[in-house]
Image (cartoon, rainbow, N blue to C red; front, side, top):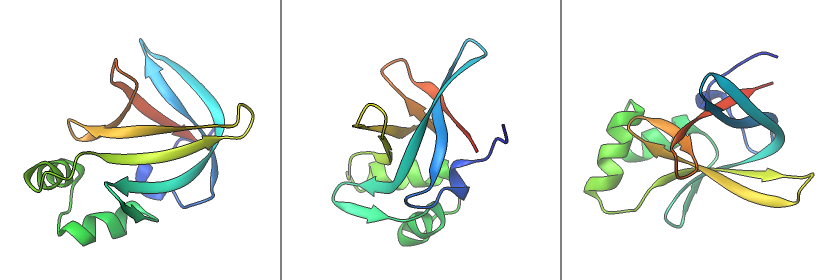
Amino acid sequence: MTKFTVATLAPKQTVSAGYRRRRTDSLDTNRFDGFKVGELKFDNLKVLKAHFGVKTLSELEFEIDRLELGSVYAEFHNPEGNYFWCAYLYNGSFRVGTSADRLVLAA
């Protein structure tokens, strides 16, 4: 499996996505639907960062917090289970679940 970053995600792209806990990855096939901040939707991370005038995920997180817009989400759809889920930006990286496990992506 080839690993890649959240910066390479494109809408409707099918990826293996999930989380890493204690050096073990838990991945399922998912469709990436885009990024969301409040009611704003973005196709990719480059456009999202440009919209807020930032260069890094840490700067993006700070700016979203400063503007009181909530959180940045990467939205996914799992076709096998027919459910939607999100990873959220926390401490400069995308996380999954209440335990804040790191988002893992692979092709």
